[in-house]
Length: 339
Image (cartoon, rainbow, N blue to C red):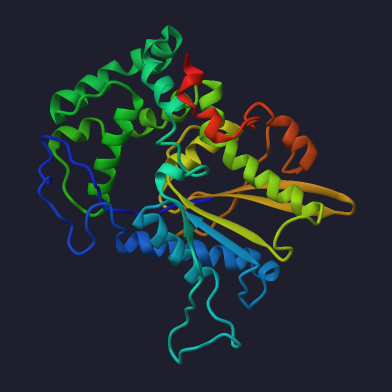
């Protein structure tokens, strides 16, 4: 599962000097050229590491690609595929173009059951009430009131919690990323302390155990279930080698926080979480890996808390039972569960 590449902002704040920008021809929220390169390079890293597994010839049974229903994630998926699977000699169809079409699937956000939870009613009610919990307030809000008030005063944006701060941070990050000069007042907070403060948002939004499962558990369950099906020779189609998911920083941030494998940070553009299934003799093991910056080309192996780098599948499942769901996401999101 990977984050889309660098993008332009699609939000502005009331005092934003660039609020009339259209970012032609990319548009609001569109991938920049650097963002396109990040995703293409991510695909090349995947080819370098998993080329032997996949083989040279693309067939539909080997790979399934799913994206959220935004242009930046769908385009990112296509760019990753361009780097991952250029046509083999058998499949080359153009004398100079080293590219072949590979399908990307998506669902409307209102139907999204893996990569996003925006339309989850239970989640919305819980998150709306989070600041009213004294423990949450004292841990995630009170210590950061100074930066909330500073941003609110200068930007005109109401900053109630870490999520509001994160959304404001994204505006600065996107504008800075394309070379726009940020207002003088932002130098007091950007890039620090706003980056490190906003990175605490995943602990804040995952504070409620049921919401943590909604945020991360269903995606993890899909990865585990597909792997167990592969082990038992029950995966359809049998030739499936890889699943790819094009998503957002929240998708990765929630999962990394739930797995407790990395210090709080905002997953960068083009970053990726990889869950590998290994066979060693009669044993099956998971390896959890992370690409933080595809332009650097490095893959980091995580030591899974309570286990090792190579963690037996059954032990991995046991360690994460607290976030794996026991009901459908539709049932978990039923707003009646909050009463």
